[in-house]
Length: 313
View (tube, helix red, strand yellow):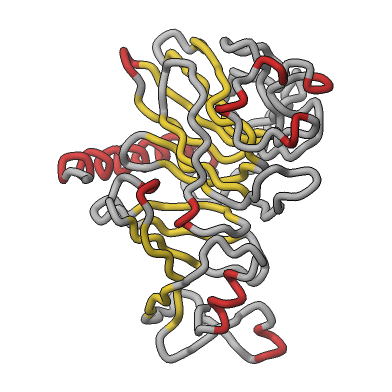
């Protein structure tokens, strides 16, 4: 369970963070006003132009060797940082990679693929076209401003786009795809996976969190007191979901998946608001209810359609 002390500590960190951001962004605004000053200083290395007073440091590049013998995968996407031992910072990051050789952790033409333990791979693609997405973990020494090590932390998934951190120091990585098992894939995709934030290199057992639903996932956010997980879907007709775990803090033990509906406005659909006349005003408060969903592994990729037909927004 999430303690009151943890919640207060996190809230305090957020408050301090916003105070720091206020001071950090002051140079971006013209003196004596809140008008944004967009002037950027050209970067001689042609990596990233920044406003005056800002700087950057490249700490990782795709293709760099990692501590476990693999290479840094390409297409980093959603990520989060966690406190590590002895003042270290742990960064767990997604890689939005599918089956394209050369973009994953196995290097050019997947030459390093033979080194991975098959038991720690979600989808090996029958040994010929492995799924190359997943997560890598970077351990950073904030005192010396140097990378301690990098390693592959989840392997064999596809298009790991977003996700979210948990209050218990892990990262939920989400597959933004609904590829099915068949001639290319050994297993269905479209699930969430949990990756612990660890400073010690190891691969996480690839356990799909099937009770959280199979759909084109985007991000998650966890309400720390109850442990309820809110989920978004990267589809033009996607729903907003919540997952009520049977055991808060342990998502692999199953739970109940629901979709959000707007009370008194069944099947609210704002995709074509100009044509349909369905509008939602900015800052408009709407009462909501939650609809239980069944068959959440959705082999036909119809979870959002069934939810909408039942009244979800």
